[in-house]
Image (cartoon, rainbow, N blue to C red; front, side, top):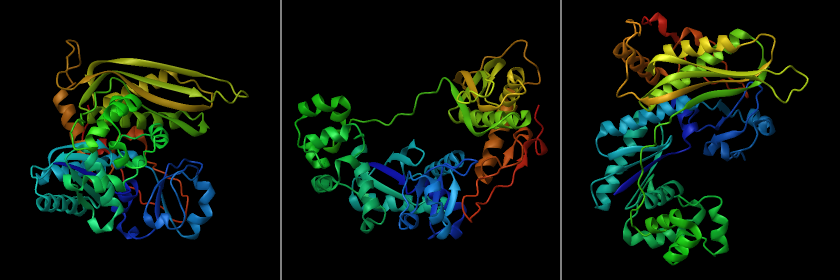
Amino acid sequence: MIIHIDCNTFYVSCEISLRPDLLGKPVVVANCNEAGGGVILALNKEAKSLGLKRGIPVFQVRDLLEKHRVAVFPANLPKYVDISRRLMQVVRDQEIVLHFQQYSVDEFFGELPVDDAQQLRRYALKVKQHIEHCTGIPVSCGISATYTLAKVATWYAKHYQGYQGVCVLLQENYEKALRGIPITDVWGIGRRTAPRMEEMAIHTAFDFIQKPAFVVKQRFKVTGLRTWQELQGTRCITIESPALQRTMMHSRTFTYMTSDRQQLRTCISNYAVAVARKLRDQHSVCLSVGVFISTNSHREDLEQYGMSASTRLSVATADTALITKAALEVFERIFRPGYHYKKAGVVLLEITSDEAIQLDLFDSPNHDIQKSRKLMETMDALNRKYGMDSVRLASQGFETTTPNLTNFQPLRNETTNINDIIEVK
């Protein structure tokens, strides 16, 4: 049987797991910027009870946020990815769920090798309780014969408290379950597909499976037919690991333009560190590092400048220090003083698997691949344990300011310079 594990209000739950004193209080996560703008991305039920909704611009509800002392956190995707990775390890260490894999940052699939409903529920409760105890992240679990039906079961686990966060959907209950779930809440039914289904009087998942197979394939192609088959208990969807990215980029459009060279160097360092971490996450290495900077093309009253360049490394690597050093060297080549820069980024090219790295006969003897890997593993392990950028390069700087949108100021992690604890060659 397939088990689907879905984190409840994941972004908010991550912040509350690090600040348990906020449990039961209104909390939102917004994509904040330096100017205090942005929109609400996630919120808990306490915040929803105040009338707040996802997608609302922060400036429109600032008075409401301050009046009810709502805790507002700026979105921190690297932090959430770290917590997601920790959750995966917690489940794997438990050795109950087989073939456990990540579908998104807050969703996971696996298999339970039993068919009895009571055993399935007992195992799922153990997994759920273990996750919540070890990570502080509340989750809902759905179990059924296919991936799509497991997602349907999770929908019921989330919407009906009687399930206590775990719903086991067996064949004898398919019809009842499919009659109760709107077609727009079925996995695989997108925004473009839903209106066409409404035209065909398809309002629930049960309405959908009543249509003949040839009609479904004609109107909704192979993807729709697979969803139709999955809803009837035939497994025809596979969750595969994503293909390796051949290029990676980390960039940002600044809220305020800047001409400060050191500020831009710090940005480039942070972008290089972030993209190098993504590179290691997919067990890859890169052979080229590129950097681009540009001014604001919409400001016709200012002089315009934009440039990009790259450098090729002697040996493919995922070492943060080496990638950052290369990025800063490229930045110095293309930076021109006197311009007001609006955007910058770091791009990694010529990405390959880290399983086999071709060495350069003329490479420096100080470049030790095994030492580099151990250093990066140590750095990543410390950051997973103590929080993102707890260990950082000196070139990243030490200021970690966050917009103070309300009376509440989120905690910030203390930082440590990696060069203070281990020598970097």
